[in-house]
Amino acid sequence: MIEKPDKLKRYNQVLLAIISTMALVFVLVGGIMTLSILYDELSWKDQYTEPSIIADRQTDQMLGDSVRKQLISFERLILLDTVKQIYILPVKQANLADAEYIDDSDLLGLTNSFTVSVGNSNYYGNGQFYNNILIWDKISGSMSELFKTRVSINYFDRLKLKEDEIVVMSVSNMDTNSDGRLNRQDLQMLCIYHVPDNRLIQVKANNRTYLKLEKLYESDDLIGLFGTDKNENGEFNKNTEPRFFYRIDLETGNLELLVKEESLLRLQKRLDGRLK
Image 1 (cartoon, rainbow, N blue to C red):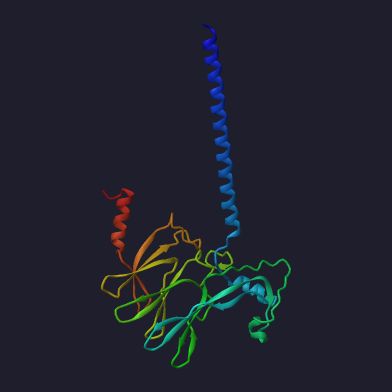
Image 2 (cartoon, rainbow, N blue to C red):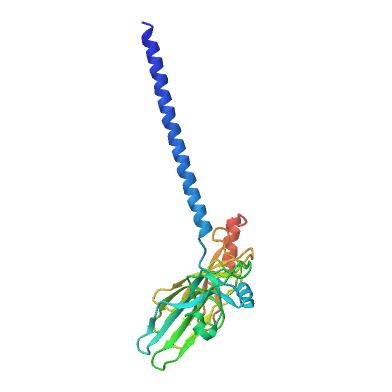
């Protein structure tokens, strides 16, 4: 009569030990998998570099040593106007594994270039975006650069208006966050190329970054969304800094708040609890 409770007790102890062991195995496996995922993410972040154009500070350093790290390159030919036969050629950059000496007599050094290691200089560049756009008039044979200064074109798209067509671009023209690169981490400037009259419009937006553009229904009116660099650190933080809509004047490139300042102030007071 006494053996049955003892056997049941031993059975429960064995069962509990098995369950505990399985739980520990699951915890260990889960921990190892979590650590592996975290390691992969950290390794990816260390290896990944935001596509960039080398900023002026580093190009000045490289020019002092007569070397370069990026070469111009092309990949697309885009027809903008079928009647006038106007094309655009986005200019991108190929990134050299090592810096090379500059030799302009050798077609920008594209055929017989060789690499060189110069001191401990940190020549950086990993651009996948564009550094300019060429406008080609096939009929006349003329070709011109859209930008006359160093920029990173981080995005561009064509937009059809009622009568005209425009090219909308998100552009970095200054290393606003001082990281030595021109890319989308800097404050973005909205640039619009007006195809019919071959005109580049640079929208004036101090201390703001261009985010997106909306064309109003059955209208050529353009509304842009811009982020405000409230702490003036040269970057826009989408989680902590505000965004506002602006009307865009295609003639002047000026911005006008879509929601008037008095309305914004009233909304803010209500959010603060100052207006009941």
